[in-house]
Length: 443
Image 1 (cartoon, rainbow, N blue to C red):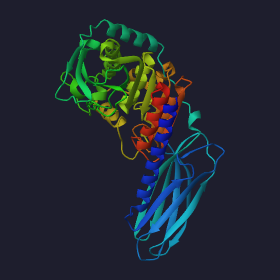
Image 2: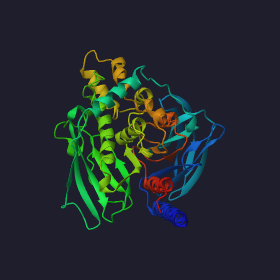
Image 3: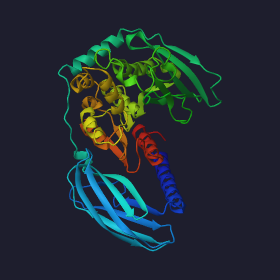
């Protein structure tokens, strides 16, 4: 226990040092542009309570030699684009000077809000876009869960169980090192389709916990050589990485393969691929796998796949997810309607809908309600860590938090990165490492 505590303290020191280094680098970086505008929330994670005034510190720099006179404005909208506040005030600043202003916004009700700060001068305009949240752990969303949802996935698992896995494990000496062995793994999954992945095992002969990683959208996972304390198992589900020989569809079409048929929709097989990966781990204890310590992780599509894996299979002991794609698909649709330019995933869904006469949004939901990650969330019982970016348009923060709030585990945490889009940052992964070590009691 002393060693664990020491390492936790040391990791926090490293994390603090890294944060200070980043802050120092940001201060040292010379900003370009005639006028530079920074918006810093009073609460570092840009999350507030409904009784709190929402405060931002605006830092304004005039990089010209000229006296500048114009206006500063801010516009607040809901995450569906409804305007709820607009305010402007005069700006005057000397050449080569800095100015700070405090923007105070009255308390807001539960939800996420877009706030745009705009500087307008005779010869210069700029906008800084930010998002803040209010009471994120109280956000709710309707569950559109079909009456036969549980039966549908029970049948799916029964069909998977009938497929003989025919596992193949081949050591790749060309990829192995003095410290680790790398194996190419292969197995038959749902529909008797062959899927593949990578297993990386430290050579020191102990039983190791497992870092089971599932892929983002049409992402290629490769052998993970970075962690000495875990066996790394990276599974490429059908259509990803080295599992593309039978299904090789590409990003524009992958998510709409058989979308008009819930029984044949591509994600039915994908979700089952993730469970087959667990079957593989439990079938190979001779490789030094500690099956009592398996955590599953993923980001974007992988975030949702990881959650669904933990929901459908209690052999997952810990769950870590980042920016989970497709969460709360109904509200995601409404939010995406407000974007100036369509982004994934609804860019793909809307394109398909426009090209297929008779394919209505009701038909879309008649399939997707079986696959929406939030409909699985109540089935997750293990400890959970989630990371989100507030500027994420692929996975709007409201949808991610709605998913999180539906998770029934009593041991869950989330980390908010205010200035990130469809990603988290280094600090998040440092915290995740501490979190995992604490949960698994890894010295």
